[in-house]
Image (cartoon, rainbow, N blue to C red; front, top):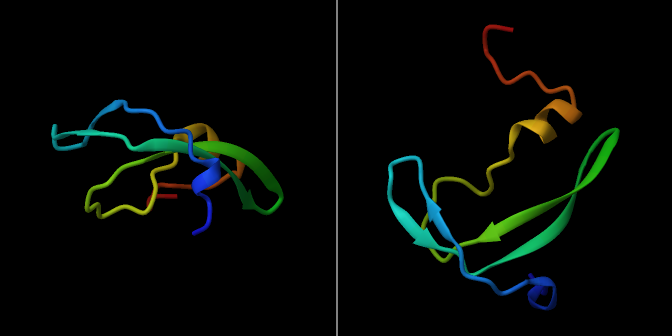
Length: 72
């Protein structure tokens, strides 16, 4: 993606939803735009197959006033 210069190479241990452990390759800070909010978030990079492109935490979901429950 041409973002190699923005990657902060650092190894951290991550524990997945299933208890599996993996080591990060690094992290990158990216701006996320969801009208009307633009906010910077740090994404950890892993060299593993994953069903997820990214996982966003609750503060960001609250900032864009998203509803995450099908019951709503």
